[in-house]
Structures are given as structure tokens and as C-alpha cells.
Image (cartoon, rainbow, N blue to C red; front, side, top):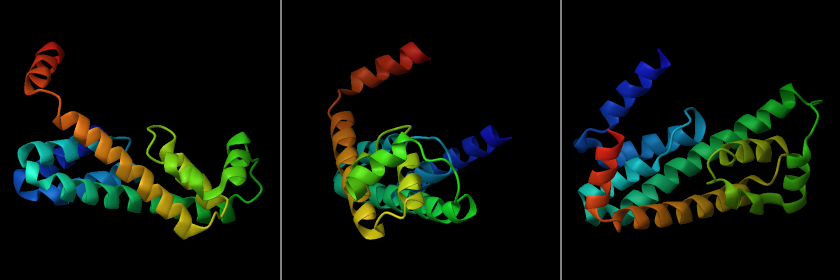
Length: 163
């Protein structure tokens, strides 16, 4: 059921007329609800229209940062519900380094939980969001630049190998 919903959502968002809207929605959702990457959406928009490189980067950063902010607030409110939970070494690490740890919010697999733990620890909100945005912005620039500069023949060969 969930798989069919995700496939439907991706088919709707892949329509060319929604471009930057798709980038925003996919970037937001990938930082909150569904374990998916938003880089392919940014890459697809930039590949279809290279003039949208910076708008796609900025919209992707905004969507992903807002998704990280939602993760922060989920952690913030969860602490009220589970105030006596045991804190792991990750919490100690976050307490030690503070909002700057949000620079790692872009890392697949740990970025979204880091944002949630920052909220749990009630780290300063705006510095945390600022570092989230900076980390995510740098990730989108690097990933999109690399993907755009890979020759098209590579993607065709990869598609052929995979499928």
C-alpha cells in the first residue's frame, strides 16, 4: 500500500510542469516522512533546464531545511512525552558541540535523526536551523554540480546495466 502511494506521488511530482514545486515537496518530504533522496529531483530539473541550477538548489535547500525544522519540533515535543528516556552517547555528543552539529543534517541515515535529537535537547532553534540550511545548501551544490558534469553517456550506460 505504502509503496503504491509513494510511486503515485513520485509520478505526479515528476510531471515537467511542476518543476520547482516538485523539488520543494520532494525535498521537504525526504527530510521528514519518507526515506528517500531529493537529489534526483534537483538533478532532473537542472538537467531539463540548466538555467534553473540556482533556483533548484535554493528551493531544494529551503524544502529540506523546513523538513529538518519539522524534525526538530517533533523532537522538541517528544521530549515532553518521553522526558525520562535514557540518553545515548549521541545526545552527549550533541550537547557538547551544540547547533554546529546540524551541519551534518545532510548526511543520509543520520541527518534527520540529528535534527530530531537537537529538538529533543532544546538546542537553540535559529542557530540549529541556520546550520541545517548551510549543510543542506552545500550538499545540494556539490551533488548537483557533480551530477550535471557527469557525461550523459554514463547515465545511459548505468540505466542499461541496471535495467
